[in-house]
Length: 225
Image (cartoon, rainbow, N blue to C red; front, side, top):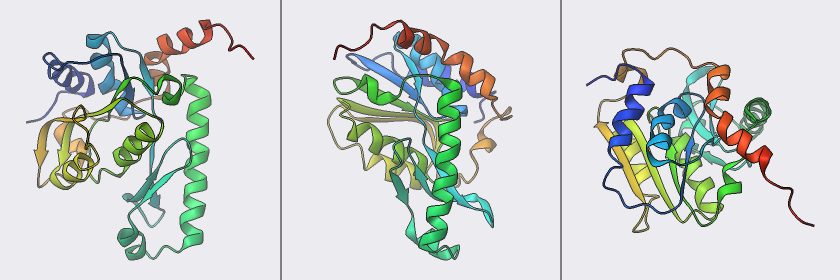
């Protein structure tokens, strides 16, 4: 099975929420592609759509191989076996993390949507990406949501490797936590193989998708001292 594109994948995922009882919730997409997939889910649920900035950590010698991921708070998930295999020492890992945090800061400033932490605790959060290969980025996203007091965490992705599905699923241990995925494949190595159109998503596209949340945040009255 291949999805025509990210938007169609999001619509297919949105249908999975038809019978799922949910209270107040927020939909958080991992930029860039995850925000596109998350759009139809947020629309179906009538929930705010925001970005949760988690990014993979990769070495210059193997840019496609993730050895970890970091969230917008600076908390990292590290696969130490992979980092050792890549010959990365502590200083190199720290340098790569600093560079990635710089890109996260750039995107946060550009997109301007409120952080997920502003919506928590007390809400269910639906974390969305366009697929999971290693699952490290989503592991960082789950840890962020749990750390900020999410009432429940639902991970929704169109496709995932069996290993990533198992590892992410193991973090969802409460009764109202769920893992929603249409395709779990032992052989998945590249998320793009499950899409007919997997062209890069532009910053401009993400900014437009996040515009309603940005406008709502700017319209809120200032907090009282």
